[in-house]
Image (cartoon, rainbow over the protein chains, first blue to last red):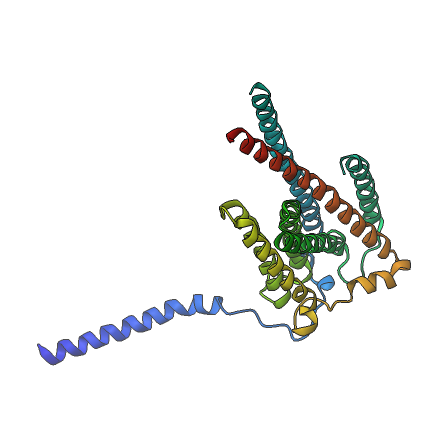
Length: 97
Length: 222
């Protein structure tokens, strides 16, 4: 037993490593970063597929401001209504005393 | 103050409509094109926030040294508006940056200090909300501390290497008035300052009524 088994075990391991390496070569090559560009490319000259449209971002910025103001004014209005109700109730209690 | 509120609110609405019309008809900036139009509301929002910081600082100092409840109400109202206008700046900035710089956010000096400044005023409101008795004094100190931090936002682009342009935006806009950039910019600034004043009046009015309610509660308990 001894030596033959050990040789066989190492051989199987070597084949396993080789087989794994062959399997990994494909994904490893596929995962390589694309070759870097050698010079500056202005955003305007990028292909349309790589350009980010400006209109949705612009609309989002202005829409957010509008929503923010509406929400803030609504919260102040709500608090004013609650305080006015408290004030009215307290004034009535004071009048009854 | 109440008599002034309605005409001022109407004037603010008119100036806002005019500002939006000017922005829509403003020329495209040569390098950033359409996305540059965020600038008109973005910078104006920071200007309104700085108005809030100024009012909060003066009111906090007055409240601390003169023990004035009215000044305290002005300080609280201004701090709330600092958070509101600051939030608008913090949201509109990344929307602009995504297109102009290619990313939403980066931890460069101006953005980081601005975010920390905004958090200081959020903490002011949290102290007022959950601080319990004596929170007014602590919050006033936080407001003064926030004011001390605020100049660093402005000068950060001159001190450190940042992605932001140096502090030449306003002079550039005035210089380029004839090219069509100055009028929408200045009108937006006016609209935001007017809006700040209107909201401040509204919020101070709320504080005054809350103070009246507190006084009535105390009178009833006696």
